[in-house]
Image (cartoon, rainbow, N blue to C red; front, side, top):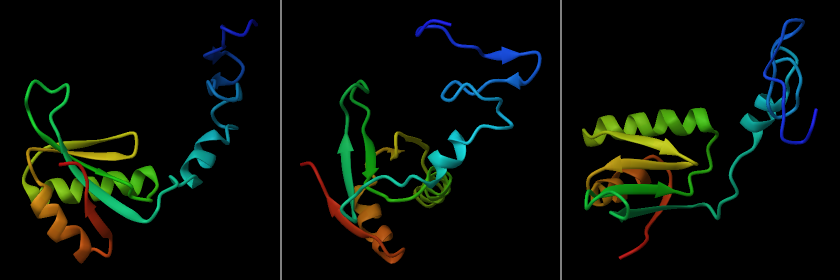
Length: 119
């Protein structure tokens, strides 16, 4: 196979991992990704952003050194406490609306060092 082609299914092995070209039952990529924690300076930063959202504001929480599954659980807890929607994208928790003040009070209660970033 050439560099731009990859196998996605094999009748012998079933689904194929796109990263290592092994059968998904033999793939170690997912386990390695779960163990990797993002490199941070230990400070959780809270900011507000409207860029690219047609004026709708979102609150961004970055710098949380948790694996993806735990980060999603934290985001769900924060969404429930704020009473808003949100998501996790690329290690950043996005909450709808301006929740900065609430998060600056709530996250230190959970043991995080928090700073406000941006304006």
